[in-house]
Image (tube, rainbow, N blue to C red; front, side, top):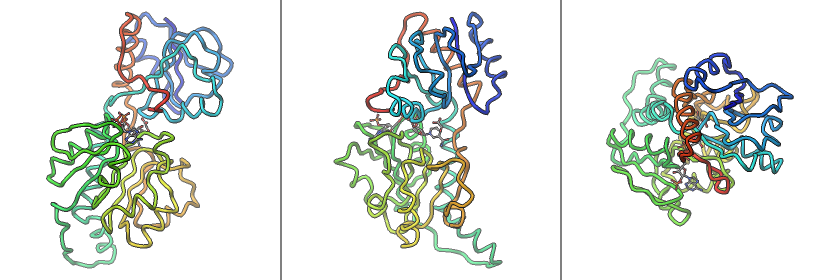
Length: 313
Ligand code: NAP
Ligand code: GLV
């Protein structure tokens, strides 16, 4: 069995070493430009089109992340790039869910306990106690109740604030009020104090964080975007901060990454910026999950995490 690997900026030797250990019978190689030799599986992150186009021998393409938007964008721009024979399979959790829960919990508690405002007071050498936000109305709304969103929402619910979740199809999750589909979107948003985005980036969800969405939230709400930059209409965020409809935002993802030095977000003190690090791909967990799925596919079994190309996630 032949496996192609491609992950820019990664320690390819370490990944290939771990895969060789997990799949001793496999022939592994890092893809280099011009390599069109046969392969059964591809393990990739943001691959170039030439790596996949015309590879009708591939049985599966493993995406080394949860979001498959970049790989589907290749197919959208150049239809036929993804080999029809190959399933596209995304990572499921592999240690990302606890990282995401830590990141979002940190941001929510920072807003709940007003630590961001205390930092400003400290910078001004001012000693003052601010009125606490009432926990019972500090409603958190999580967009996306998949592998990551459901874990994040349940983690937050343990802190005692009201937590809501929103998904495409109806879901029931202990401790959460759940909403599904466009018909329930406005009810989900109504009165939310912290909006957390964990949707996949698809044609249906692009630009979902916009002026209309912000207007439905509680006055002075907070935004935490940890999904994709393409979900956010950037000018609408700046307008909502200027008007006071939003009090602050924590952003881990951006339309252009790295965020250009001249981007206005860098100048806005109410925006907290991190460099797409809320949930990193962990090598050990990812190699283990991909190797188990390759073993299963070789036995003729089905696996979970197969992307529905029509839905886009
Ligand atoms: P997932 O398991 O596929 O879950 C996606 C969730 O979004 C599901 O609940 C799905 O609804 C819902 N959804 C999809 N389209 C929708 C729509 N049009 N309307 C309402 N709900 C919709 O994905 P995941 O593993 O949780 O990951 C979510 C995203 O996080 C990834 O796609 C990626 O972009 C992002 N991410 C970011 C980082 C980072 O470091 N910043 C790391 C990992 C992932 P159903 O339940 O009905 O299917
Ligand atoms: C990272 O952004 C991922 O989708 O895994």
